[in-house]
Amino acid sequence: MKNILILGAGLSSSSLIRYLLQHSENLNIKIRIVDQNLENIFVKTNQHPRSEALVFDALDKEKRLFEIEKADIVISMLPAKYHVEVAKDCLEKNKHLITPSYVTNEMKALSIEAEKKGLIFLNEIGVDPGIDHMSACKIMDNVKEKGGRILEFKSYCGGLIAPISDDNPWHYKFTWNPRNVVIAGFNSTSRYVENNEFKYIPYHRLFTQVEEINIPEYGAFEAYANRDSLSYQKVYDLENSPTLLRGTLRKKGFCEAWNIFVQLGMTNPDFVLDDSENLTPRKFLNVFLPYHPSLTIEEKFIRFLGPQKHLFPLFEYLDLFSSKSTIGIPNASAAVILEHILISKWKLNPNDKDMLVMFHHFVVEFNHQKQIIQSYFVTIGENNLYTAMSNTVGLPMAICTKLIIQNKIKQRGVILPISKEIYVPVLYELEDYGIRFVEKQMEINSKIYNS
Image 1 (cartoon, rainbow, N blue to C red):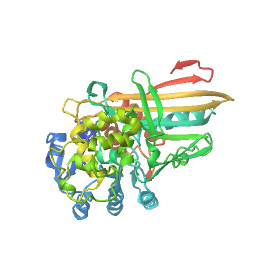
Image 2: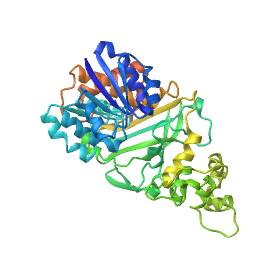
Image 3: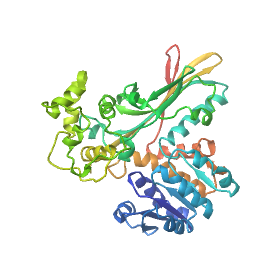
Image 4: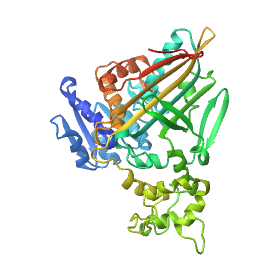
């Protein structure tokens, strides 16, 4: 029997765990799950006979190593910054590793040793990154095999709230780690290339420079640039392509309002606010507004908004002007406090359904004739446990776990899901779960046909 060790049983792990348990008899596997919260594990396993709950802090290296030694494959659902430590443990104990997160330089540095040991360290196998890579590479490989050139590639993804559950003026709820949403883009510059011109968007302008994206049947969205599109020129073999951009989708109007938090400094995780536990939401907002001897906080905030006064109801909805309760978190940064406030308003309710949207836009050339290829999917979650985010992050990881068990992945070292041996079977099986791309092709003369 093979042992699968999952580190972390958070929001995105539900569908991963369900798939592996459903296939546990056929694959002859046992799934062992580490989390500090026993209830987090039980709600996802229902105490399945082929599951085992391990209640401890996965950051405890000694305990973690002890459990990794018993495993055949380790799946890290921990925050991304801890994956390298887990990878080093897997090197020490000769275990395969799967993570959904971006490959860092530290992770890349382990590739040669992992390859020498015959180990698979598969990263970026969630949704974004993950399904985006696989679906894009399928199209790009097809274009190249037919002798075409890729002139432009833009890819967008967003974890959003489904229309049926969209009941707040922000048109947004948390469907994954709230901290990552709050600090998205902080202290960095987004980099991409457009029409052979390198472009850089610093954080203070990130949410002001958005692009409108229209998805059939779902309407208009807006997209802001991801942190680093340029690194994918080499990954996708697009060094000679004039345009490459990866971005994040939000409902229209979100970015304009979110930018107010950015401009005020309320998304900053780098400094602690004095007496933070005794701050009310109202006082928290006020510490970022200019002093005035007579204006109320509401009046100061409206003055700060200036021509964007129409946004005031969105911040009122968040109870930012309330003094009814204190934050209660000592030594908290602005980002931590903002996250605390937002969770109470943007938490998924038991009957809420989320939505995952992905959209690819290519301009390709065959024999001097240019074509547009657009490929997209929209999937709706089942409920607040088996969310669209959980399905799209967890299912690719689970399917790849199966492929490793079946010895169908031949690559070794630190790898991404950009080869046919991975993306063909994964994309094929994802269709069984309703994750299916619609592809449209358009000649530059605007003749459209579906494929």
